[in-house]
Length: 206
Image (cartoon, rainbow, N blue to C red; front, side, top):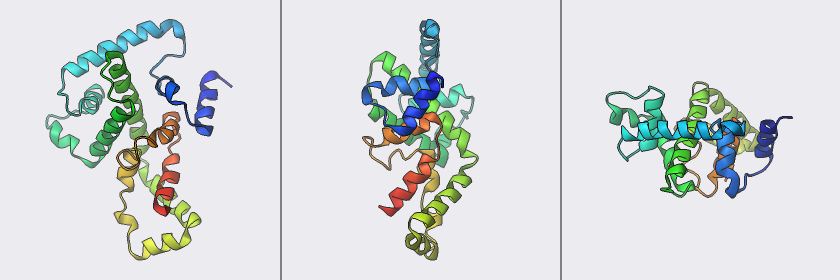
């Protein structure tokens, strides 16, 4: 088992210690290179790109906007774009990450924050097209865990009004406290999106 595989296995089994979370997330999200001899070069390139992107944006929603610019998804009417459901959810994730990392104004930490957010947003994009499958799996698990609640919600036609899309696309940012959410994001960093299904069901049952 490779070092990365061991790290993924650890994240799936345990909660990453706070003191190591920044470093672990950067490894899992492909921000920090595996080979240490290229660390300085990659870090320099990351900082340069971060600086270039940051200079073209306003402080408000800066990290999400930078990601849109980098991925060439930014539209002329960016304000309108950021108000769409998907990007509102992503913005909540950016806000939660800011609080989790304590809004550290240290430049290196700001660079880390941007690249970590980029990794998480890339993950959201990866599963967003198949998000209906997450809904279906959530309904199936809810029926299994609490049949009475599931049938009650069906009877009220309430399942269609529960903001699953928002929950999943924000990875529960703004819904679950910032003190608890890193434990979920440890799994998202590995690409284990199914954790969102279990979180949603537990959130409904509780």
